[in-house]
Length: 266
Image (cartoon, rainbow, N blue to C red; front, side, top):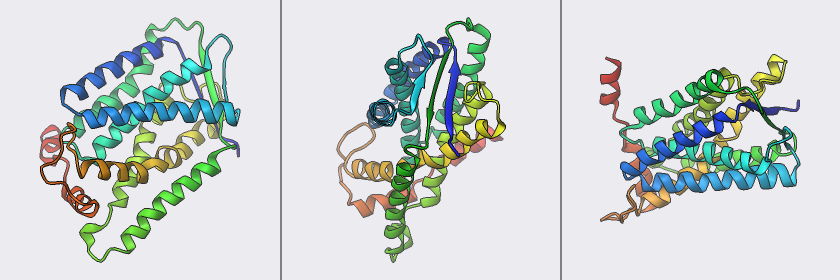
């Protein structure tokens, strides 16, 4: 079955989202999350290379409604979801003490932005952008399998439990991050709005959540370990650099501030 990932939205959505990205980046900068900012920016560039260079120029799977620039719309989309997804992933992996606040901010925006646009958008010059997936999902599946295979081989070769990578944690992050914005787009009437079949509407949400962002989790985790074993989040050198294995053990012992989350839920 060919899965069509489609978005239909008012141009106001782009401008509001750019404002959000500036605010979000400002918060991260204020909190000295320099490593997170750099990862998000580089991920945005990578998304653009993949989306425009591969999905459009190579596989010809991208298309956009007349009157709109595919390059510039894709650049915004790439920086938006590339930056937001991977800064959020980095915060999850690092088990940031304000993870609950960042998560609420991101999910809240993905849900509220489409609703705001529905109320205040002009309804004119609507952008419809879509891509088919049959030309490349097989390649993405290979990347996904190889990445998690590497983690499985690492874990089964470890004699000590604390040396193992927490694979359920990585899977949860990889699936839920993508699922979060897929649901936001779907509920906001942006994802697959012009498609009539229920299966066509739900298939991108399910398949993309399992595959697309999740395929990068093993690799982004290895990058995180490689960077954080020598540098802090503010990009200062650690007083005592750790080995690769030592940083995995340390990360496994770190915990999100569950006491603060409990206060919110109390």
